[in-house]
Image 1: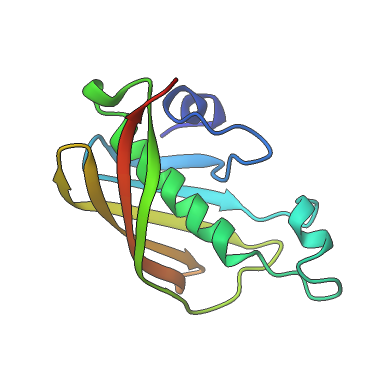
Image 2: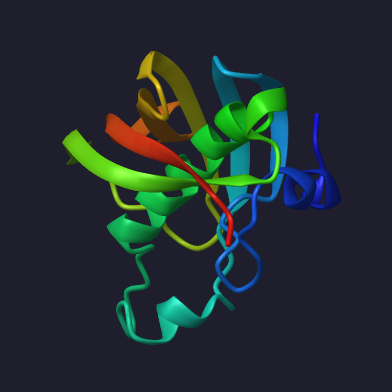
Length: 143
């Protein structure tokens, strides 16, 4: 398990763009399970949408990507590096994510070749699928 301090030791994102609050489990190079507590005081809810706040889909995808980055960047050879988006495939949104929800984020690395890899990603709320798809990443050195 990782708390916010442990997360920040592995991935470079910081507030206000750090999208995961805790990591329940991870296997370097293979998988990670994380959580995001969705709070009404997050700035995007002011405009998305007034009177009907819904977490933007792109932020759900970013939270999934950060979860996958925990699995990839925790590998000894990737420590201190960054994982960038290289593609998004077969991604579908199934239900809205609302303030007060706890978003469970699961990513399993399904293939890698050199610095490029693909993760199978699923986000759920109370056991119901909110989003799922495949995320392609590229490992790069930090400047």
